[in-house]
View 1 (cartoon, rainbow, N blue to C red):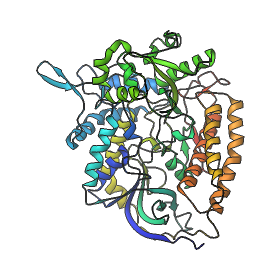
View 2: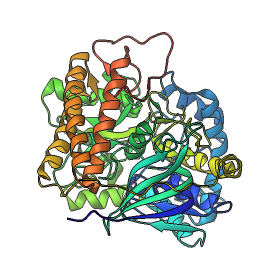
View 3: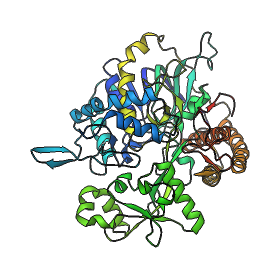
View 4: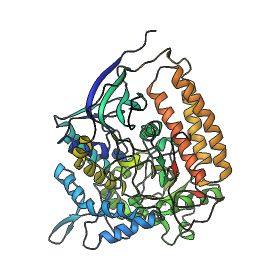
Length: 537
């Protein structure tokens, strides 16, 4: 069969990802440059779209920036960068005001003379500060941002595009410091590989939740940005800190459905099958303890009792309240035969958010010239060893704004795009054993869940490391011998991200935040970041 031709063209700024970070940046960056926005599925498919809770932001007179900063630092277990935390919290109100200007309507409540934001409270927060649009905040944000982006004549959106790899000057064997030259992308519709020369590439690709068997993330969360950056020569930081959301619905028909933190903020309790609140044995905050603490408490309870799940009980709030405050969650649960006004909701922890990633400043700058990283794919130091609930959308907004604001300065230091080589398939042919991809995908997710989950040991991590080395080799051979497909590219990235998580966890000889290791139960006096240098894996 003849090789597939590749298309070659040039772009000034390429954005990979269409969540809140990618869309916000594209919209603001279009003032200074023409933007090509690539998304793996349809443009609305992103982690942002699935965010139920909201945006943590100081808007109440009863709250303060100092309290928000304090809560963030406490949740981060000694690894947050305080300067970053302060900047994000300080910038938050202005960024939220811009969303309102775009048409986002946050839920309000009547207060005497008029309306005011109906602020939610979530775990780890000492005040009500979470702005929300019912329980579909992410969907409302995505809708408003996508509408504005589609209205711009300076932004081109291409859907069904799977990024393959960044192209660097080092890969092209050019002299001088290494920098990004462009990106190879598989067009899912035509199955052609696009060779896109670019002055700047912006990764806003989200996280790697699909590394785990149980996750709240959509299928697209395969760690593409982290994997591509690492292969391009960028060190990766703190990947051992994978946040497990304590309350994912335990139901075979909806294995990735999140039961929002906000239910616990409104009085919901995590209980066992007999209705007993076991969470206060671990932390006096009980069901409102930070996610790392509560997820471990649930995990321990399930292991001790042999229970398949625990329960979230919010029956005391009644039908009227639940239908008004959590209409989407209530409707979904009823469709599955669970009425939260009359029945406890079966829940289990599930992989939710990566706190590590590509080391980046708040304007998205990385150590590789021409590469920016925004949102969950970036590690700025805001989240430390455990993310405070609803800080992620806030970080994405602040980073996107600051990156766009500094874009003219970034572009002025980068040379004109240079043509990158077209994609060469060599002797690669169509895969004849696609079952291998499916099998390896399942094996990675199962072993990560079994050996690199909420509770870890050195022995389990070494087992995972040994098996992942073989899987990485198998995947790499598959990649070079067969024509690339979207499934193969995702598997390649998934395997590398899993290996990065394991390697990072092996290097951390303590239990801090989201990394709980029975062989290293103590907390070291001074927190440090874990850095996996290129070539280690």
